[in-house]
Image (cartoon, rainbow, N blue to C red; front, side):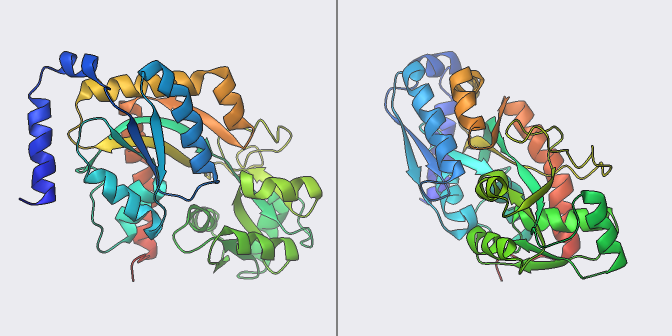
Amino acid sequence: MSPRFSRRALGTSIAALPLPVMAQAWPTRPLRWVVPYAPGGGSDFLARTIAAAISGPLGQTVLVENRPGGATVIATEAVARAAPDGYTVLSADMTALIINPAGFRRLPYDPIKDLKPVCTTATFNFVLAVSPTLAPRSVAELVAMARAQPGRLNFASPGIGSPSHLATERFGRNLNLTLTHVPYRGGAPAVQDLVAGVADAMFIDYASGAPHFEAGRLRPLAATAPTRMSLLPDLQTLAEAGFPGNDIYSWQGVMAPAGTPDAIVARLGAAIRAAVNDPAVADRLRAIGLTPLPGDSASFAALIQSETAIWGTLIRELGLVLDS
């Protein structure tokens, strides 16, 4: 019997039980929360903060397991193949749910068929920043330079297909700019060259940019989310700077294996939303540049659909192949 068939068969047997009984009995043992990134980063901090907050209300420990590698594919496939019993969940972001499905020719999971949205948790804020050696001190001046010198501006990113890269492409297309994308092998070397003036600009996540903003090693020009960031309250958004329609932010939520009973998904989602809405938890998230995003299963599904229309379409138009 194949693993996929076994999982589906188990899902069928679980679904056959009365859902109220399932929800009341669950959980009876610790939960496993799989994070597709290494310990110490923003995704790990987010999962561990929420896991600690929901362990008490659920009456069971929520164990965070880091499974980095394969551009989130390793962790995502593992959860997609897990038993749909509510004891294994995934920190899922736009890389796992939108970028990979659009850019991989061969992907060992289907985000719609193999996974089930539980809830959203937070957004990761991005900032359009430039090297302090660059003359522009506003988005308007940067755009004017790009128009006057097509291809002159080098935009760094952590790699091809990263949210930073896609933000660069979308920004350039929306404003009819010719920008030169320079992909790096990860965020650290990209930021290092931006600070050194080797690269000119970057859509950088707040956590990576914050120390350099404070020290004056990078110049932030605009926040890229629809609203201003609490940690940079004086920084305009792109829309406020006169360039609407360029909202760019990354987000994260929780997914369970397809077939997980709705009653369990609802109970787990409610516990996570309560944690994210808790002022102490929300303050911890905001302190590292995250914005709490408490949403239910339906709103998460709608977010995936709307973001796929934007980023999935862009990836296909660019002809990006991420598993070459």
